[in-house]
Amino acid sequence: MSLITVGTMAFDSIETPFGKADKIVGGSATYVAYAASNFVKPVQQISIIGDDFPKEEMDELRRRGVHLDGVEIVKNKKSFFWSGRYHEDMNSRDTLVTDLNVLADFDPKVPDSYQGAEFLMLGNLAPKIQLNVIQELKKRPKLIAMDTMNFWMESAMSELKIVLRYVDMLIVNDAEARQLTGYFSLVKAAKAILTMGPKYLIIKKGEHGALLFQDDEVFFAPALPLEDVFDPTGAGDTFAGGFMGHLAKTGDISFDNMKRAIIIGSAMASFCVEKFGPTRLKEVTKKDIDARVQQFKDLVSFEIELV
Amino acid sequence: MSLITVGTMAFDSIETPFGKADKIVGGSATYVAYAASNFVKPVQQISIIGDDFPKEEMDELRRRGVHLDGVEIVKNKKSFFWSGRYHEDMNSRDTLVTDLNVLADFDPKVPDSYQGAEFLMLGNLAPKIQLNVIQELKKRPKLIAMDTMNFWMESAMSELKIVLRYVDMLIVNDAEARQLTGYFSLVKAAKAILTMGPKYLIIKKGEHGALLFQDDEVFFAPALPLEDVFDPTGAGDTFAGGFMGHLAKTGDISFDNMKRAIIIGSAMASFCVEKFGPTRLKEVTKKDIDARVQQFKDLVSFEIELV
Image 1 (spheres, rainbow over the protein chains, first blue to last red):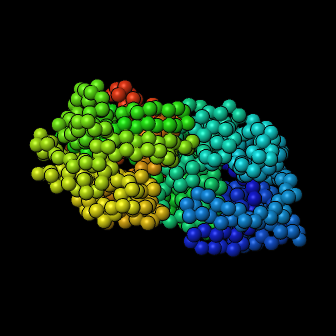
Image 2 (image 1 turned 180 degrees about the vertical axis):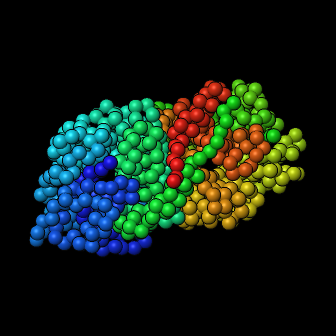
Image 3 (image 1 turned 60 degrees about the horizontal axis):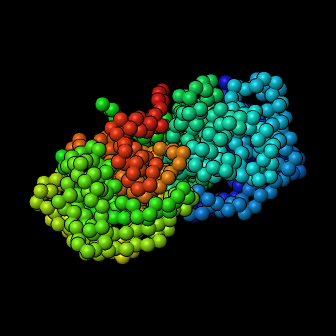
């Protein structure tokens, strides 16, 4: 089954305690595509770039079965640029520069060839843009998932609440879940979010794993304890890409299959942080992924007989 | 098999965002005993109290199979007193008052009736006192576990490093593991600690669960996502009590059984935080504990076929 992913394709400059990377390829849709393309073809990309975006990167994505018909290329303009510096704990960062560039005019169109897709991943964008994409689809996908961030809660909360009514799943981090609901307890926040529209909710906790909620059910996926987190940029999008990629591959949106998907997403995210940008995601093979998933199984498997 | 637990029996005054509790019973050995006595008898307590410590609390502990021969009662003196205030995230707190009282003269003796115990849990105390207890034992226990804290790393690091050579397992929180080793990465910190003496290491991460390390193996136990954490005081000691209680009950110190023990410890800790002090621990039944352990199984269980 096919997966549409909407989001940024961009340049990032990143500083971590381990080093610096200047103007490397990034963006939410880029990470989603690199992760998801391990599991499902086609991944149908919707984004906007300037004519500075590297042709080799586009070729590499195409080679992996990513369709780029929905990627608008704006002549004589620059791609979205973000620059940030991570703190020692790698869970927090300061944004140094945000140059919207082409993103300021992003008005995504769904190409005819994408119509009929069963899965839709709406990356972190203005709620209005997210809603437009949903409304452009002639047939409602089997599962619509969306990401968002604090910026939209502060500047466009009413639009955000409208989009939430149209989606099946929200994927946010713990701080965002708290800000969206006003609850500090993630269990209370989850209950509140599940009344806003989404039937499913994932709360990402970075190095502390992720929680999946549906009705009264909850599942916890750990993050792999890593010796070094080299660069966390894109880890959340990579997680979402692995998650949606597995769902789209199997076409199964049962809670049990979402558990598998969240482990696969966590495994992909654990690769992402090992090198700057999407570098590591371009290297990993099916064998690497299987071995990493096995590590997650070993990490949390235990046997208790209750007598 | 029997379990010796050494630590404080005390009074605590606690403020949380949910309320206040004034001068309630606490202390590391109290929590360890309440948790462990669900699994193993006898729990053999070593502590020191003033004559202000409630007789009913001693009777309740005895009723649960806790031996108190090793608890010294000092006439006309007060029990150790701690007072603290938790921040909204419940993971951090300010200490308001620490009155050592009888604890200033704590020089624990191991009663003859305790000799031969197979398991020893050394609560957070001066490293010198922890070492004294180990040296008082005529037969080395099958497993010696110890807790410690930042205070001893700052004031008695060299003694602490000596005790570490005599124990099998260290149980600390993430901040303590970082401070002890100078590594921010918990995986690196764990590797370093496993060269200092202990063969096993547990790193507690509060609401983010706990990690168990041995050689190159690692196991992760989540914390149960709770709607309200009412009072975290004693949760770490309750965790240790459930963990050591299960090991002492089964006499099995294999890595697989330690996984079970860490889940049981986490289950006990999840009860502890539901009410002020050890209140909730006095109420729970075997049926409650089994149901809670089942919740942990459900929380992390998933099936993935790697093909």
